[in-house]
Image 1 (cartoon, rainbow, N blue to C red):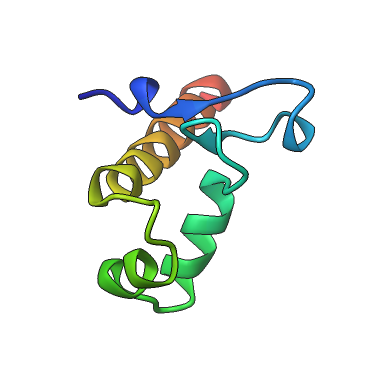
Image 2: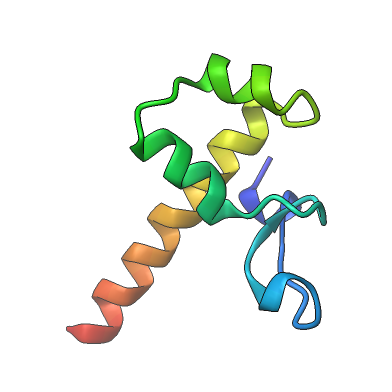
Length: 74
């Protein structure tokens, strides 16, 4: 499954930030938890409505965005 099936962006919700399946939790939130050292298991325990696939979608989205930014600056 593609991250595009999980990550949603709606201009009027959460200031247009990319969110997971239309919920309030953003890609940024998940990436911050990972950067702070939380494991996937800890995130899933704290947010039982998330799935492992949601976390992978956040990482995939971030990688794709980085790739786009690098291509645009070349």
